[in-house]
Length: 376
Image (cartoon, rainbow, N blue to C red; front, side, top):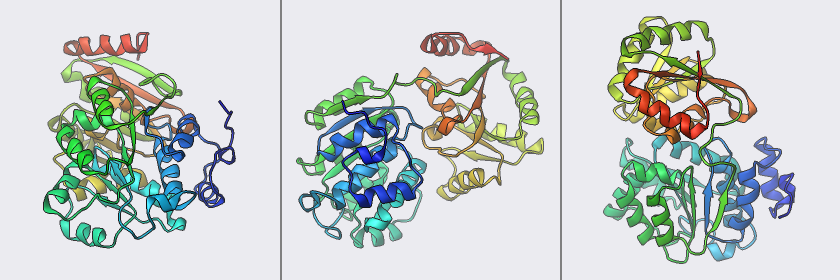
């Protein structure tokens, strides 16, 4: 395999290279180096990679290239209707993917729209009538548009399933199946997933044709640079312990709880202790979730309390500390939670609180890691 040290080693047009350089990208990550060539060739692809590895750019860059560069005529002309579709499990992730497409596609004349729940249909209908090139959508909202007849996938040439394991785990399998049945059979299909459970394997067998398979590093392993610390604490001791850690930490802190109710309760305690905190979970309205995430990014909030639904959708630089207030249900969710810190070769701390009734979860995590967590 050709060693790729620079984006110039990849078969990209000067216009793409200019957009990549303008975005501040210098060297492709492993998933980008390995995924971009087969995507440019038009192959179906399965990409196994953790969040934080640059996988969004790994499919955005070649998709935009296919829409605008060599071979673009085979994919239709700009303005001919949506030609690329990206499905994402959460609204936050969909917005971030659309932002990436806009970053690389703006100067190429590629127009991207977002179809997500929690927002009124009116602006989305207007955006669809404007014949965008790329649709980024959550499965539920796109299924609504298909049911109403307000969206057509007849011109779609590329379909991307991002966070496929999370999408199916959240119960979107019926909507995903329907969308894939409606999209043209001769499309290119790209499936990205951090893990490959049987449900994803079955989806791949049904809908991908002779896909290239790329696995970057060990699937679902911790990002380098994360210091993992374990605190054994029963339910009554967790909140005082959290407040003590927050008092000693000045950087951005992301706290994960298992339930929405617990997120609300922890947020009240953190706010009462004088910390600027926000909540992110499924019961919050779209505007509330966006305000919380934007406030966390800008520094208006130093602490964000979230449930697992947000674990793979948060892309905030310089998170110094991740706290597992409750241990997650699976080792994979543990990896995705702590992967929110130590981004882009930075360092970070992941603190996990384990109550006696969580020992089975702790043992599963430590077996997955291959070593015990260090006691704090």
